[in-house]
Length: 228
Ligand SMILES: [Mg+2]
Image (tube, rainbow, N blue to C red; front, side, top):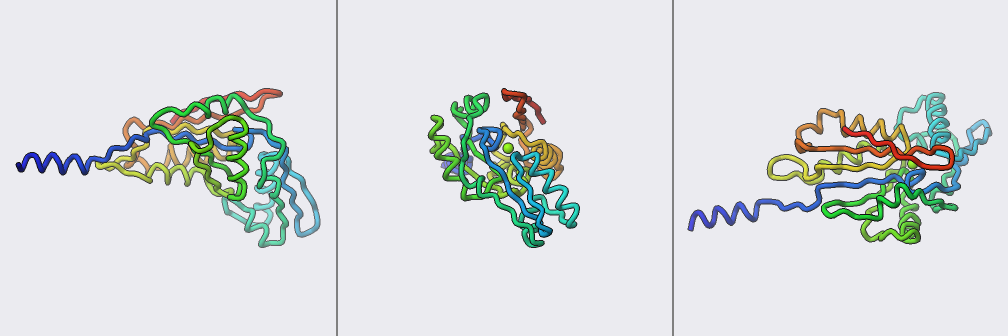
């Protein structure tokens, strides 16, 4: 009887976790190219229209340096200093062109995995993004959208790894497949997921992060794989 109870206790305490892989997709220039621009007016009246993320990041880096701002996402801090930052194009999905080298992977949902869209956009964009996924034939009920509003994706992904810890003290997540075009975000994720010693204790021994960098090359998109 005692043995039976022991076994039973072991059974109910043993956590069965079917999700071992996270698939994480950025949206802009990863799932789709859109014709969106950020429009910024500086306190001195200078206006800028930034038609892609690289231009936006460069503007933000310059303006942050000028104003002495250190936040990962400087939008709020710049607005507090009198900048007007219009991101309204990014609350809709404007004239999208699907990036099929990514969406062809996305639409196949492997077992044991969970699929996320992790975008730097604000939360208002999540509905339109899910509608767009439906438009291109991706079952949006299988996709969990998250808006970081410009905050660090590395922090978010590190948190996802720590979300569920199994009885052996290790995360249930053994593999992450991350699709992203921004070098800045990729470096942030490498720093916080691959190289942060705090995470080593909870990463399973076989943990893998596969980064698929989406590169726009003339009229086509290519994927470059990196691992850690
Ligand atoms: Mg992007």
